Image 1 (cartoon, helix red, strand yellow):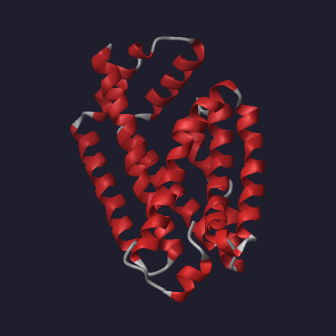
Image 2: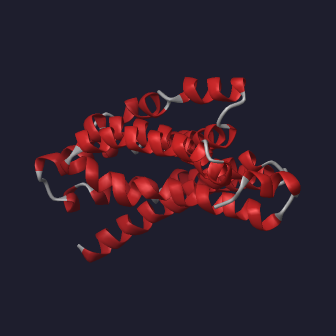
Amino acid sequence: MISTAFLSERPYLKEAHWQMFAGASFLVSIPVFLQAPLVRVAPDISLLMTIGWLLLSIWLWQKPKYQLAGDLLFGFTLSWWAGGLYWGWLRTQPMLHLAIEAIPLPIAVAALCFGYFRIGSLFFLGSLLGTCLTDFYCMGTGLMPWWERMMNAEDSGISMAQVMPGALAQMHTLTGILLAMGTCLLLLGITVWATRTREAHMWAFAGAVFSTLFVDGLFWAISNAFLIGS
């Protein structure tokens, strides 16, 4: 863990900032491996876990030695809460995705205005920004109808092999490729800009934004592997 005193005594320590970057990136990836399968079988449990994450984040935040970790975990709690709501009950409605993911936005903005949980709030904003860019890419490439079909197919037990080729065909068009390249460059540009500062909360923001590339790239790789395997 990174202590508050450690960062305050040395305002720019590369190792400490990279730890924050790595921690933010790791927390963004957790829902992919933990929450995504959990909401399929127990969405109520996933939503209730939000309370546990919140209590843990506040408990850590109150301890000077682990304050930064608790701060970061607070932002993760906001993302977990919104993700649990959407993927648990509304995943077949792609046009509602951004609206649901943005539900905690007033909390993050209020925390920033009052000077609390700056790291966690910027982490949430970075994660939300990555979600926005991903959804805009899906809209631009015409993937929203395929998103709905894939989610409905999953819930009704229809083979994904019947739906996935159409979605991948949309991604492999010239428009899809250009939009993917533009989105990647924009995410990388924002990441580089955020890491040029000496503020720990900006490195949390950068880690959340950058990890969007990992999550989206993982989805693309799995989708292509699934198609090849089928």
